Image (tube, rainbow, N blue to C red; front, top):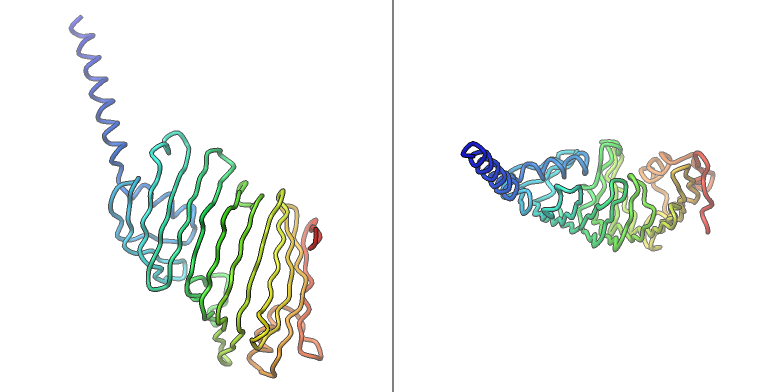
Length: 257
């Protein structure tokens, strides 16, 4: 029976070692998970554990330093359940968010609150000659994603002192706000300016996994060549200087319920 006792002891020791190793998993594993979910971000100076970690610097896809990141991750991740809390803060601003995933195709986002320099949000889709200025702040109390689509969503985002630096000059736009909601997989949003900038913005967006529709108008309040060329990127400029937004793809839902 000695061989049986030795095997049992070895199994127990291996289980204890595996448990200790899991309890103190290196932070780099969680950092890789975060980088995969937030495509384009790079985490440097990673320390701590997978469950309570820190990254000294987070770089955006465009190489912008977003600041330092702290996170907490539930240890039941081994069961496929994700409970991830994030806090990012630096010279560019701050972001707080919580992510829960208890089903393979369903993710709950909650407590999203951010305030960032607009330049930090510029992605590769934006032409390099256009540099956004101002501050973007927003709140998303709750969002339910199926795949990457918001089945349920409430969100408010404001671009304060909005401006764009173009090759032809600096264009001040004023304040622009977006309010969005999604119910049963149908997303509807409205974008409007505060009436004090050089550009009047009034647009609605509707989308679903089957298609999307954008309708609205961009109307300059001043005569400015840089502003005219900027809004011309969104469509033909009419005689009065306005650009009518009217685009759709697929089976687009109506912009109003």
